[in-house]
Length: 239
Image (cartoon, rainbow, N blue to C red):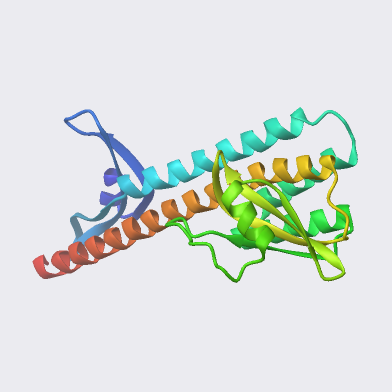
């Protein structure tokens, strides 16, 4: 690139790596421009940006998405029977993977469950990762589901409320709440809600991890931008 630049071409490279003396790879983004003086090319002006940390975050985010897609693929292939329950599980997983954020992913699951069960409506409470205290105004079934980590049911008006925990192992990350018919849910429905609760515990983890990586990436980009601006100003002053 330097030889071409000395020949009169400006060169740009988004990503170029070299091995440092400590055998670690450093990644750079650079622009090369011919330095003209008295009508002739006298040298090269180079603007560089160290993008090692930004590239690491991009690569880590990509690996995370690849791992998630592999997990979804493995789970989808594991579904052998074409029962309505298995179709529902598959649809909620695919919808969550395709969703642009946590709220659309959870709403897609609620819509699929209401369509499958005939329940009129539902909602989701996502607990703060720092730890939400139980709200005393919540229905009794919600409080019991949060404390026990199990699907709960309670009469409510002419119908009932069903509350299903969203779990990561034994930790409750959130709660699905559905308005349902007056009769208690069947064992099959409880098993289905338990399966979906575990699946969406992973979904919540995924979006939280991606959000943390995205914040770290944005911070690295801002730091790189400030550094590049400083180097550009210094280059102008030297000239």
